[in-house]
Picture 1 (cartoon, rainbow, N blue to C red):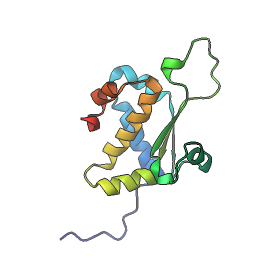
Picture 2: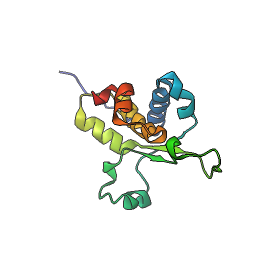
Picture 3: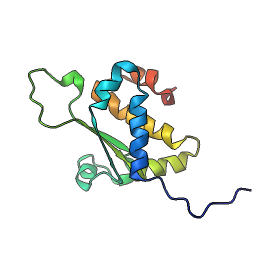
Picture 4: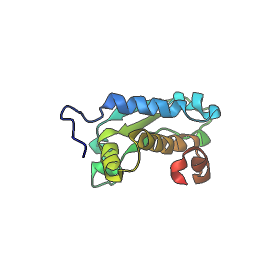
Length: 136
């Protein structure tokens, strides 16, 4: 039997951010530089207005969010109004990680990040599956 270590702390925002940056660096070469231009924001939960706008009843339902215009919809004539942002929400990610119990935190953060990056690039489910083995 393993004893619990009483001084362990829950993974913090900085660790989730570091794992997300690792996931961006692990993307296939053609996508790394474009994905690195997306701003990463890590928060405990999505803001209340986002939860309301998405008609969610529980903030634990949202692990990540892409906020921007997908590359497939952008035009060179468009003036950028704000940077594209990928939001990752620590508490829902940790909750899902604990519930699953069969994936590492890095695997789950990578999965959420790849899903949000997919919105940016306009990827199909097949494109996602080629990059994220989670979908197999």
